[in-house]
Amino acid sequence: MNTFTICNKELNSYFRSPIAYGVMAFFALIAGYFFYVAVYFFMQMSIQSSMQGGGPMSVNDSVIRPILSNISVIGLFVIPMITMRLFAEEKRTGTFELLATSPIHDMEMILGKWLAALILYAAMLALSLVSMLALFAYGNPDWRPMVVGYLGLLLQAGCLLAIGTFISSCTKNQIVAGVASFSICLLLWVLDWMSSFQDSAVARVLSYMSVLQHFDSFSKGVLDSKDIIYYISAIFIGLFLTARSLEALRWRS
Image (cartoon, rainbow, N blue to C red; front, top):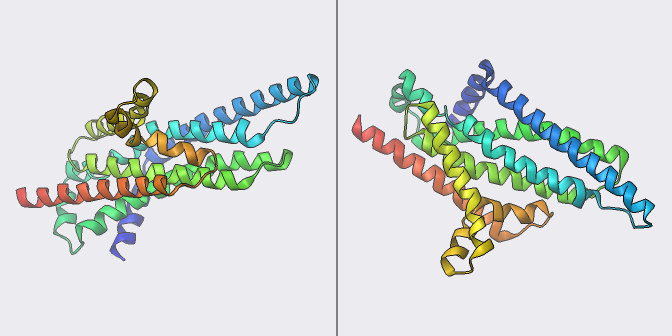
């Protein structure tokens, strides 16, 4: 019950400030641009293919999959904006002490804040889904890969949000929390590049740790248990480290 109380408080604080509206507007604008470019490119290539006597192009492969991948990239920039204030703002304003002395378990507090951030990101994904649904009015794409892709986006976001929550708990400066979260998320993103020019055991391990590699199957509409386990494990580790960080703060105070 306390978890949902904290979650509701966080959502209210998001939407009482321009943070949520600004981030959502940024997300919708960039996602809309990617949608327009993907559809325009698909139409041009379809016309060329029909003039050359080729078969029909796949909407899922040519439009939906690139858009999902691009939305994943947008999340890399948006997620640090969401998480940077979760604990850093509480510590800066002094309200964290009130939370720390209230009859709320640390994990309830952490889950409430993380869940609020995930709901906010899910609302942004819903904005992009409106554009995707327009494809069904003018075409006949397969809806199942789209559902799997959005599930992958949520799991990937949950993973990065958990990491951002931990980093926010380590500082009282929102800018530092945002920059550090972006740096770590970017590092987890580019680890996959190691496998493109190396085939050593270390390169394979680093590549497996990349959030990008595990989203690739989701973008293709494929549910793979190893990718689901990876994201859930990363979420658990991020929230566990946050709990240890708060525990250390209690001992120091």
